[in-house]
Structure formats: structure tokens, C-alpha cells
Image 1 (cartoon, helix red, strand yellow):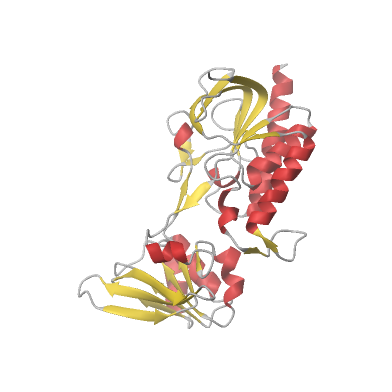
Image 2: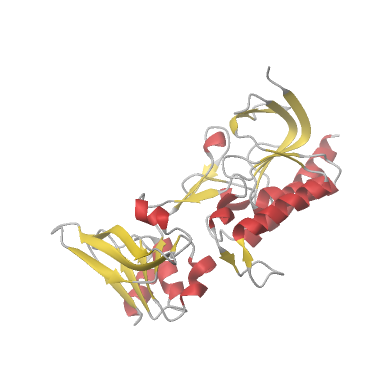
Length: 313
């Protein structure tokens, strides 16, 4: 038998944005319900060492998310393990349906479903994820000081990551399947002029190779897309920079989106194109994509929701 739950604020998503929204909404006495989604904790659960979270010189990503969840619960946020499969924001109260069969109604909604890095889809890539394979240079670049690393991609993200990684690496090889980049010209010029960066045209990554004990990357096997010739690039890390996909499927047809699917919010706010619906974190952010900025936006979303609900009353 399906259950029906009502809350003043329904938070969908459980990364830094969602849990922080849960803390602040609870402190505002809004008795929020947070539905964790398909990946409780979000992208940080696939990250090992985190060294850029204020207050922690070093913390494991999964551990940080466990602490955030515990904090939200301690403040009074009800955290539910469920997946929202449908969201109707055409009228209030808003209605969400969970995979469990539960129907959630809410006076306000905070979307914090995040974004997912696009991956190559290789078994070896998945095997070494977190052990030499990453999709975030600003998160993990520090661990490759003095090492040779490979970046795959051809857009702004790939070039920016390659340039950033030169702060740590002895050499960066950018692998691209075509002979021209999609990145902005000023970025391409910086790339061409950087002595630490070598670009490998007409190649695609075929396999990540490394050691078993301890698990770690030793090289990246690439194939020439025209000749089929296979070579192995010595490297301690592979950074996949072929873009991010915001998890905006629930609101694709009901909210204003931009930049390839990110939820558009009003400047200086988390308010979306539908009054009473707020969005925070990587779902809205195609620029920074950091845990600390997501958490800050989660705080903003809870405060925006509190003020909006007070105005309605």
C-alpha cells in the first residue's frame, strides 16, 4: 500500500548541497524531508582524499558525506532512502513520487540532484577510478606532483584541466580524437605555448593499465583513429574531461534550463523559473563544481525557501 507524506520543504538529492539545505531548513523549523536519490552522498562518495574542504587538512570523500548526513539528521532533517522518479511542479502543493511507491507533497522544493561526470565507459577506467583515474583536476591534481599524466577531451574543460595540472605534473599529454579543439581560442593558445603540454591528435583512449597491489595507474593505452596503431603513454594519472551531465531529468520539461541542461537560477539567488522551486549545487553550476560552493548554495536554497514560504503565509 502506497504511503503519502507532506512536508513544508522537500529536498531532492543528498550531496553537499542537499545535506546543507537540510541543516539550514531544519534550523528554520521547516521540518524538511530529504530524499537521497540513486547515489546517496553524490560525487564525493567516489572521491578518496579530499584536501580542499575547509577545516579538514585531509578527509575521505565518503567519510565527509557520512558526517554531513549525520549533521542534517541531528538538526532534525528526515533523511529517506528513496529515488524520486516523477516530479509535478505545475501546481502547489508540489508532488513527487518515489520508486518506493511513496508520494511526497511539499509547499516548496529544493533540487540538489547534482551532475555526473561523463566517462569513457571502459572497464579499466572504472577499475582505477579513484586510484589514478579522475574527472576533477582541482580535486585530485595535487596528488600528481612531479608525475606524468594524461588528459582526454577537446573542449574548454579539457584544456582548462590540462593547464591547471601543469602546476603539479612534470608533463601533461592531452589526447583528442580529432585534429582541432573545441575550446576557446585564448585557451588553445595557452595550451600550444605551454612547455609542459603535448597534444596527441587523432587518438582515443583504449585502456588504462596499471598495478594490482597496490592498485594504481602506470600508463594509458591509446589508438590512432585512422591507422589503428596502438601506443602506451607512461602516466600515473588519467583525467577524463569530456564534460559533465547535470541530473536535470526530473525537470527537463518544467523548468528553464541552459548550458546544456543545467537548471537556470536567478542571479544571486537559487530561485528557478517556477516560484517555490529552488535549485542548488552542481545541478545549477557549470563553472565551479566544488563541494564547498555546492554547500554554500544549499544554505542559500534553504534560506530562500524559508523567506519564500514566509511571504506566502
